[in-house]
Amino acid sequence: MFIATEEEKNPEDADGSNFWCVYTQNCVGPDGAAVSLQTCTASRSCYDPL
Image (tube, rainbow, N blue to C red; front, top):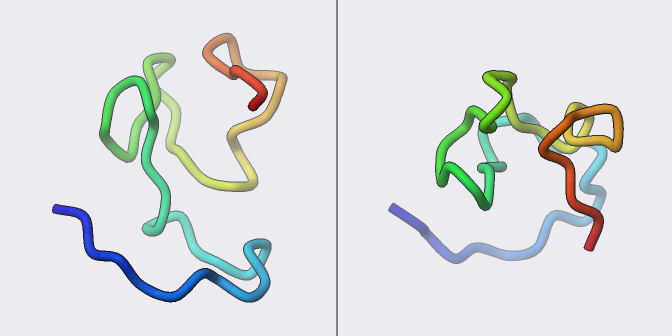
């Protein structure tokens, strides 16, 4: 379920529960790792820069 809220003022302070993968629509990416602002980087095989 998606609930629209105000944008995070400082995204670096947000916890992982606010993020999900665009590929799996889940809190775990296709590579089996957790999804978060800190973990979704170019070092992951599934990473796709915007």
